[in-house]
Length: 146
Image (tube, rainbow, N blue to C red; front, side, top):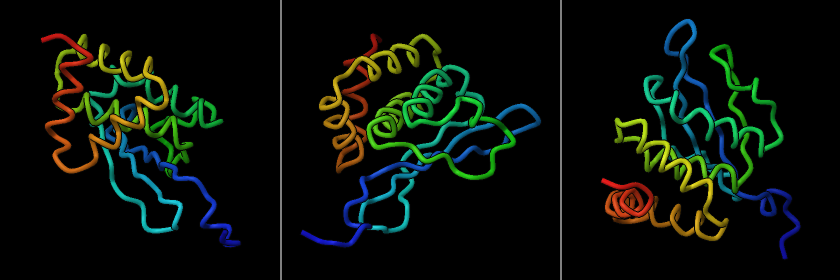
């Protein structure tokens, strides 16, 4: 077993708030590895799509021990998310990003929120692996009609 503290750090996520106007913002999400490598971009959401995704963002921030007030247009430093809330948020952002109908976005967000941790990790690995676009399409069909 390694005595290096970096080797024991769990994977996590960095949520960046991207200002898009005086009262609007988008977000980008990066995955950080336990090996201390550079963060890897995972997902993003533009300001126009954020209204439907805001409950998922707030849930991830609160589950990571941060106040929901951390999400503001004035935020400059990234918000560190714990692994499981980060995985759920990433999966929600990835699956909902091409959708325009608020009802479908809500169905995706609700479906990801109701998944077990194992199921969320499974779908996240599929969505970010090879052929991820096809797997995300399958997840959208699984979680929302149409």
